[in-house]
Structure formats: structure tokens, C-alpha cells
Amino acid sequence: MVLLSTVIYGITPAIVTASRGDVPVLDMIVYRSAVAALLFAVLDRLRRSRRAGPSRAAGPSRHRGILLGAVLWGPQVLLFYGSFAFIDTSLAVAISFVYPSLVLLAGPLAARRRPSPLDLTLSLLALIGIAALLLPGGAGGVHVVGVCLALLAAVGYAGYVLGADRLLQGARPFELGAQISFGALLWTAGVGLALQRLSVLGDPRDWLLVGANAVLMVAATSCYYGGLTRLGSGRASLLDSLQPVVALAAGSILLGESMVVTQVLGVALVVASVAASSVVARRNAEARR
Image (tube, rainbow, N blue to C red; front, side, top):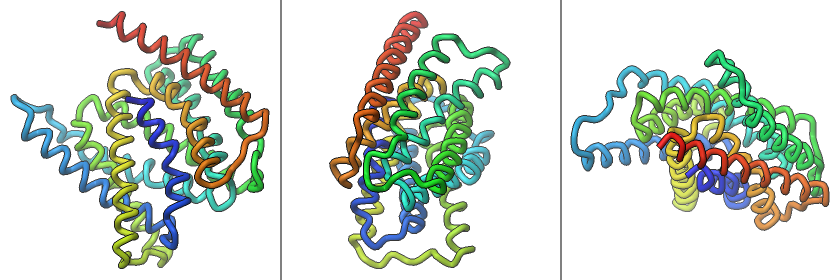
């Protein structure tokens, strides 16, 4: 489930960049968040109507989910997509993937325990591969502003993953997705209104584009939540390290972004880390069963 989410998240930046046309990035994020919140709410209602027996109460986490979306998810999405104006989409994805190491370090520290040597080793291997991916492969180059925006987005995303991991223990996944999307809508719409840059979409093709991107985001988030509840934030983040590889391939196919030899080696290191962490996660799951 995490790997399926990784593929969708990896191709989305290139798809948005290649297909959004005249729709500003801020408008895309605002309206996509609104449609995603609605889709999550519908899915949650359908799931509750078809599920027999009492469901888990999600009241205590309702406001926390909205707060998580407004404070972490919404801002990091704006920072991440904002970096595309300065660097290639695939490069932005690669830079943002310092987040699994942040999760691996912050998660155990929050639980007052040390990260396992295996987790640290796999994280270091993925980081080395990502460092190799940072070498510019296309004409976009490496711009300091773009790198800083992508790094700030990584910090925000690490906090979001840790927060979602905790909230999923006491909430229905689709309901939490609706809350986080609604919180992101509040934040991004507020930014748009404050900057006077939020516009009304009148072209049906623009709404079709927004709806398609919302469906992709809902599918990716739902799969990630499903894997997160089974693997935990650390393992899920390591598996998600395959995303830069997917983003590089999508950027190359859809946007003409290219790789150099060192980046290919970085791809191999990331794939090796993901494969090893997948095997370890599977063995741990079998041991728990």
C-alpha cells in the first residue's frame, strides 16, 4: 500500500506541472484540497454505512486533524510546489526526501527510545542515494531558493507523518483525511485571500484537472494511511524513499528532465534501501502475526 502511494505521489508533481496550463499553483492546491475533503467525507460515510457493528469514536482527534492539515500539511504543500518555480520537479522530490531520516530520528526520540541500528543504516543508505540525486541533470540546475523551499517542505512533511501516525490510532482513516484536507483548505485559502491571489475557476477543463488531481491525492493518501497503520512511521517512510526514483522517471517522460550517471547510481542506492526495508518490514509483520 505504501509503495502504491509512493508511485502516485511520485508522478503527481510532474503531472500537475505538465497539465495545469494557466491554473496558478495556489488555486490548484486550494481547490484540490476542497475536492479531496469532500471525497474523503463521502468515502468515510460509505465505509461507515457498509461496516457492521460499532465504529471507533473519532471525536477527540477531530480538531487535531484539522489543525494538522492547517499547520503542517497545507504549508508544506505550498512550499513544495513553490520550489518548482526554481528547480526541476524531480530535484524537488529528491531534496524533500531528507524527511524519512527526520522521521526515523524524531519518532524514537518522541517515544524515548533509540532508533535501531538497521533503521539508521538503511536511512543513511537512502540519504547517500538522495545526495547523488541532487546533482543537476537538466537545464534547471540547483537554485538556492528552490532547495530551501524543498527542505522546509521536508521538515513539515516529517511532522505531518508523525502526527498522522499518532492520530490514526484513534480515528477512522477517511475521516482523518477529510479533516486534514479541510485544514489545508483553510490555510491555503487564507494565504490566497491575504495575498489577493485566489481566483475563481470558470473553465470546466480546469475543474476536471483539479478533480483528477484530487482523486490521485485521495488514492495516494488512503494507501499511505493503510500502510502507515501496519508498518509505523519509520518503516513507511523508508519504503516511501522510492518516490524520488518515480519522480525522476516521471519528470524525464513528461517534462524532459534528464539524469546524469551519478544520479543513476543514486537511484540504485535508493532502490536497494527500499528493497531491504521492505524485506525487514515483511519479516517483522510475520513475526507479529
